[in-house]
Amino acid sequence: MSHSFDPTILREYDIRGIIGETLEADDARAIGRSFGTLLKRAGGSCVAVGYDGRQSSPMLEHALVEGLTASGCDVVRIGMGATPMLYYAEASAQDVDGGIQITGSHNPPNYNGFKMVFQSRPFFGEDIQRLGKIASAGDWDDGTGTVTDRPLLDAYVERLLEGIDGIDAAALANLKIGWDAGNGSSGPALEKLVARLPGEHHVLYADVDGTFPNHHPDPTVEANLADLRTLVADNNLDFGVAFDGDGDRIGAIDGKGRVIWGDQLLMIYAQDLLQRRAGATIIADVKASRALFDHIAAHGGKPVMWKTGHSLIKSKMKETGAPLAGEMSGHVFFADTYYGYDDALYAAVRLIAASARLGQSVTQLRDAMPAMVNTPEMRFQVDESRKFAAIDEVKARLADSPDEVDGTDGVRVTNADGWWLLRASNTQDVLVARAESESEEGLARLMEQIDAQLAASGLERGAQAGH
Image 1 (cartoon, one colour):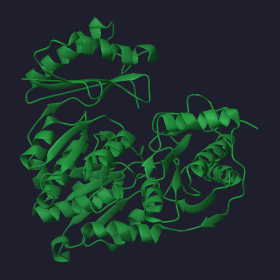
Image 2: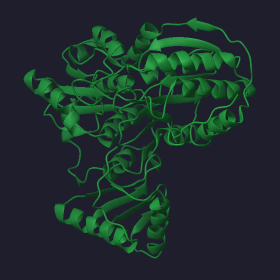
Image 3: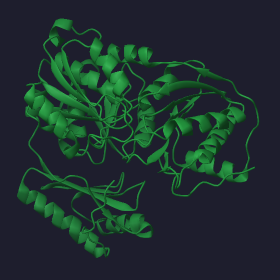
Image 4: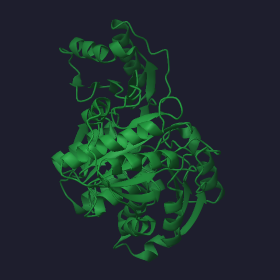
């Protein structure tokens, strides 16, 4: 017996495909067999399995569990919930050696996939390719594992609440917060959480519905925050928080309805953290504002710019011992009194805590940030074969540039006007560009530099690509 996957589904950070086209029950079973085999050979024996609210998730979970047990792994089923609840199951239980969450994250309803953690480390890149090789060779271990159900929702919510430990409840009693779960799998945990948090809470779309009837569950797209913005305005709330489809990415708006982007949230978290942990290393991806890196340094921290991608950031955190990291995409990682994974519900609790400890409202904290003029993330289609080559060409042309050129992930160029970034996506045949300045004129000059570099490589920014 062996199994061949559709080559498009084994991606850099996870496995993801279209149900009935590139992803079926047989694929889930083979993923279970291959992952279980790898874990057994590494000395592990027990895997936690969770799933999101998509209509195809229970079917995939059933097949995945069959594959894991057929390879001799024991399975702990934690049921339907947010991806960070699966991470919590893996990080907090002594008897669990790995975890798999069935989720399509913020993709359309007909997608689904798998996010994996292996002996407390991210499982990505070569690891995922190895699953494919084991399956196509049929190189599976055989065995008979056990299956137990372990509902974790209450324990998980209890752990989230530790994020406000030590804060005077009176300081939180007057808070008024809006929440939008986007019909994603974080809804049940969110409802239990707000029932226990001090203050006044207004919740949208907490019922799990894999068709996402109200709006697409991606809080980094401003259009998806419209209902939350209305909720905050109508009820005169202090701020609002939104989650993606599987609860590992956070979006937020302040009391004036302004979006607080991923790097701006990190400015708030960093300022709070550095009060208690002077000199700490804080990591952000190459798409983050220069204002963030300056802010970390100004508060006595050590800013590190790193590659985009949640698995890459988690690995860098382990290497540097950083207690905090984040990405523009809304993944925020707390290793400070938490486990170091991206958990949007916990990040929301820590936003409440930061505001209380800093003695300023979220709106005041947002007001204090420097006014930058920047582009959204621009994504444009480019042939897969040209994707990385074009970036190398740009680097070569800028070798003698008087500007500051950073090649951590693509090319990030800093000069008197601000900075611009050009990088290749790890997951799609697109190039990603972003630029930031303190003036519209400066931004226009930065965009001219991007366009000139693209033109020199025979490319143009015309064809915009979606996620």
